[in-house]
Image (cartoon, rainbow, N blue to C red; front, side, top):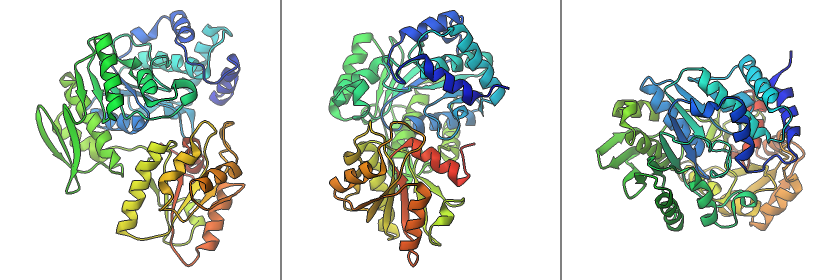
Length: 436
């Protein structure tokens, strides 16, 4: 029997480049498939640089707390491709995924198309064939020319914080990148904006005016989410919600939760109440976002009582957020902070390490074996040293952790594995705790 992994490998050969932003190829294929994008459940379309996945997770948790059947499309996956497609609350099973991929491949008939485009088409087919109340559709890269941007009239669009990333494809400045993200905005469709730097907000508002999108619901202007005495306080024109803190750790999750709340408050037809929001805030789950690993094969390589944390953030803004949280943990319980990092060659590796310069004791660098675009451990170590951190390259993740275990056998260090979602996926797989 053909499995999904072999099909996915074959689909990579249909285009010479893994990333080639365009709508033409997927529009051609969708037409041949009967235009499933026109028969989807109501769509909430989510773009942004940081916080997309967490915001999607909050949206899903709150909608499911309200009894809604929710499809979700996200990328990349951590361990298995199946994580990208959630059908009415359940990850797609192997047989269903294989059938959809084979159908899309057969109809495409060998025409040039990227793997992300053809797999997005397969996902859209599946979303039309399983009943659901809402589809949360996360942009893969950018927005304007992303394969998910084929929905003519979503229920709402969401743009989480925009920062510099993927400059090869989206532009060299944050303003240019914001234009690409704003490409998901649609005429007369509500748009919810997380907190943005001023120039980004100005660009998005100008794009919204140009296409007639709206109404706009802008963080710190039309709504705000803040921490007060350890609780999440959300406030907008309809009043104030006093909620428990988000289950996902980190102060940045207050804003991500707030973005989800603002979105659902802008869509009263979905019937999500304050009680549903409270339940969602407490039940949300999203692996590899400041995830504390407390059991498994990898934690056993460290000295007893050590802390092991995992985060998939991979750009300087993401690193700043995580460094702030590590500093807050240090204030509460002092431990040596040790980084274990692998980074792709498309990222600003020196910029990633800069926020940790006065915080971490050392960086142990490791290969990212699941990506062909990974920097070598020696290259990552050089970037860390340029950012002011001592660094040591290793040939494997396990080797780095064993080294830490030997060197700190009388201490209980705080170890943070970070730098890449691909690396995060490898960690969860090697640890024996993949996403469910």
